[in-house]
Length: 379
Image 1 (spheres, rainbow, N blue to C red):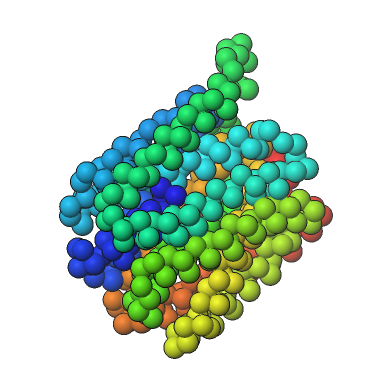
Image 2: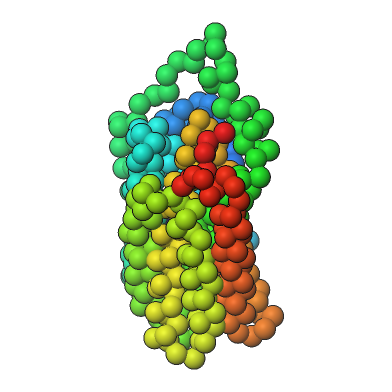
């Protein structure tokens, strides 16, 4: 909810500061960029110091960002800084996913990853509630209101999550997850390929969720509250289907599911380029977000299977790519809108990237190793 808060109130904020199309995309994308950069750091820190310490630190820092948004945020530049601070909220996945991965056996990794990632439904809550609150009390006050659930979450996290066990200094190899990742994971081309795939699916989901209110308002003159409701429906579709993607990936292999999914996304994006019809455009966007959510569950089944021993670091690395994709989508849409005068160019570009992802999966599927196994085996 905190991560996507600026996007949910993007219409009100951009109107107050009279932002251009590219500035709107930058404003909405900055929290996503902050989350992308921080995931790279948070994942290894979680492996090293434990989820409890790092998780509480994240909650505290995003609380500071909310406090700044509540009491400050008087210029466009200051809102960009607050957006980077709120990126700590996006980095929380690098803590939550390893906790779930370690708690369940390999046969159920996809479902476990999908269930914990229902945290994506925070997009739904932010998109639905924040515009209504902003209309009633002002968008600055919404940042202050959000401090309450963050403090409640911190208390629950402190109570429920166990502290990290004492390290065994006599066997440092068991604790050197970062070193293992640097020696093997970072040199594995599969890691970069999974980053690309997740950058398309999760980046597409979170980026489109953030930018959709602006798109609906600027393209179809939809009001802030209605745009938030429509965004919430799209976020609901992408969130609830993620566990299903993980569950089916457990049964049939994540790579097999992804092969056709990206091509479907590409086709839907190209159809969405016809922006004359509101009903058709929104229906296509709804299906696109559903496909993005499904793909997110399937990809992390592969990540958890491949990099089980360094899941925190790997999830941070892959998650960073997803956050980076989330930043590029709203910024790219805004920049292309300013350059071409239409949102069609943004959807066409997203469709082309999704098509390239689908082709890469097809090529990978034909390799000898992938034709013999349902999932990519662990190093």
